[in-house]
Amino acid sequence: MADRTDWPGEALIVAAQAGDLDSLTALVTGSHPNVRRFAHSLCASREDAEDAAQEALIILYRRIGMLRASGALASWMFRIVRNECLRRARLMPRERAQLPEAAVMSAEDEVLQRLEAGRVAEAIAALPADQRRVLIMRDVQGYSGRMAAEALGLSTAAMKSRLHRARAAVQHTLGDLHAHH
Image (cartoon, rainbow, N blue to C red):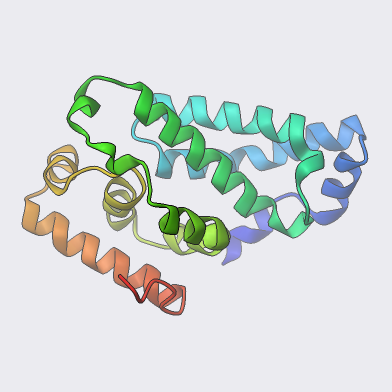
C-alpha cells in the first residue's frame, strides 16, 4: 500500500499534538490530498466530497489532541470523512427521500467499521474505480441496487457482478474478516 507514505510523518503529528502551530498547519496541508481522495470515493457527489473534506480538515485541526496513536491518522480521518459524507447524504431530501434507513448501519456493522476502518479504507482504495464506486454506493451509502445501477449507468446485472467482485476483493484483502456476509 504505497499510499500510506503520503500521510504526514510521526514526528509532525507529535509536534502538532504538542501545540506547535507550524506543524499543525503542515499536518493539515499534508493530509489534504488523502482526505480529498477519501471524500471523493465515499461521498455521493463532488460538492458533498469537497464539503466533507473541508469539514474533516477542520476537525483534524481542532481535535488533533484526541488522536491516540500517530499511526492511526489515516483510519481516524477515514472515519471522520465517512461520517461527514453520511451526514450530508441524510441531509439531502431530493432523491434520497426514497432511501429507507439503509444508510444508517446496524450496530454490528458500525463496530466492524470502527475496528477495521484503516484496513477497509486501504482495501477499498486498492479497488479499480468502477468497483469502488459500486461498493461505496451499496455498502457505505446504503443505496438500493436499482438506484446504484441507475446512478452509475449500469444494468442491474452488471452492477451486481461488479459489487460481487468488489466485495470479494475487499474480503480477500482483509483476510475474510467479513466471512459472516
